[in-house]
Length: 198
Ligand code: ATP
Image 1 (cartoon, rainbow, N blue to C red):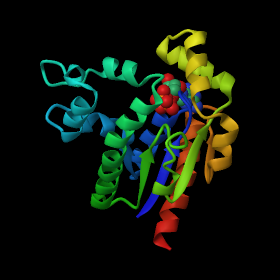
Image 2 (image 1 turned 120 degrees about the horizontal axis):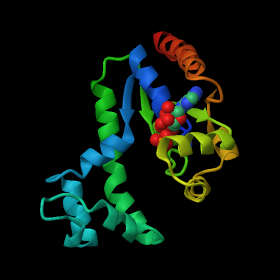
Image 3 (image 1 turned 90 degrees about the vertical axis):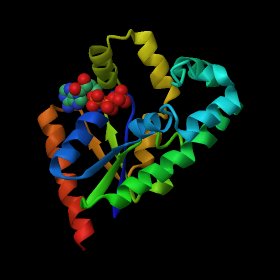
Image 4 (image 1 turned 60 degrees about the horizontal axis):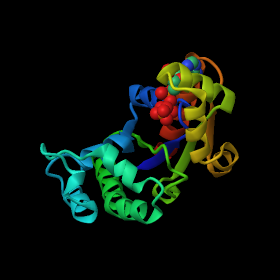
């Protein structure tokens, strides 16, 4: 099964592109969704988080105190590493298990932090949704209504555009219309489907 890792910065168009891949028949697996499922009440990862960081990370309903955990690992690299050691192996296992069950011609893993977390080795090809930073800022501002300073902080925390471009096997430049984005996705769909058949 051909595995594509779809990535890109905030607001680059990952969701828009992956929705179209799904529409065309690809198996699309969103790693953000998977990681949320892994910490639902009663899941072993949640118990491990409570054991590692304290009972106060789980509220009375048995749900993860997301904001509290985020605050704890923010700026604490060791705590972050510990959290990643709990979550990452499980996310990987869940991704691969879901891909194995699929009958689609290829699978698209949506991995926003693919470069930051070094997950290139999990996939056969990296597909970057690339967008000029000015457009990225404008689209994020329009979608989320957040201010420039906040967008700037997020952009600064993410891998820079040049590094992403160097690490990508395929690139869709999403600087045109949504129809153009869909056309670019269709072209790659042909390519990925073709690779599987040969
Ligand atoms: P995030 O990393 O924040 O989850 P994302 O990479 O999934 O973002 P999208 O949500 O797909 O990005 O796109 C960001 C915003 O830009 C959305 O409001 C989307 O509708 C819009 N958008 C994406 N591509 C285009 C395009 N080609 N033309 C116009 N608007 C677009």
